[in-house]
Length: 191
Ligand SMILES: Nc1ncnc2c1ncn2[C@@H]1O[C@H](COP(=O)(O)OP(=O)(O)O)[C@@H](O)[C@H]1O
Image (cartoon, rainbow, N blue to C red):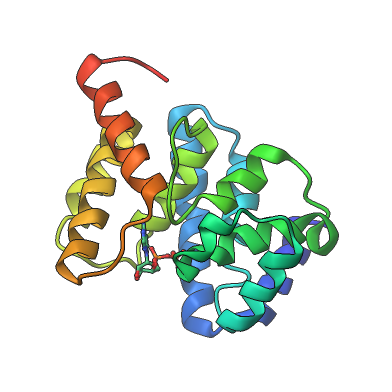
């Protein structure tokens, strides 16, 4: 499928507001990929598909997850399932089979340890696209242009603080990802 065909298919699946968000993520993912040396074509593809299933009913996502070999840990927080289901159906729906692209969709909401460059780009693009509005977002946008790992560490902290304030569960992969990336940032290591 061409990128334009994927765009039209995604557009048909989402509310106008959510589709504008996706367009923002595509734009930001493309830009961050170019700055940091990731593949911009792959970044845009992952960004196009990441929220394809975002408006599906929870019951449908859970049912599909049960049929798709998705680890039951991801059922703990059902808001995390849509990226995994999008990745599971992407080969058939869009002809996308690149594992890195599919993982960027799978982990775009939670993050995980040892994220690839592409996964980091798409995670941050989702958090920082022009339609996002929260107190730290302007500062995070600036940091993301210069230091992807620092932006990721700050973004995990921001999400975790947000979830704690709302008495919401924190997905364990996010805590693991947060602990690891701060170690990387403090050691000055490049991963
Ligand atoms: N790491 C996490 N652990 C648990 N819940 C989370 C986590 N990240 C996000 N959520 C929940 O998922 C919801 C959707 O998050 P959001 O970042 O808007 O995802 P997306 O861009 O994939 O739609 C949030 O409102 C929050 O309730």
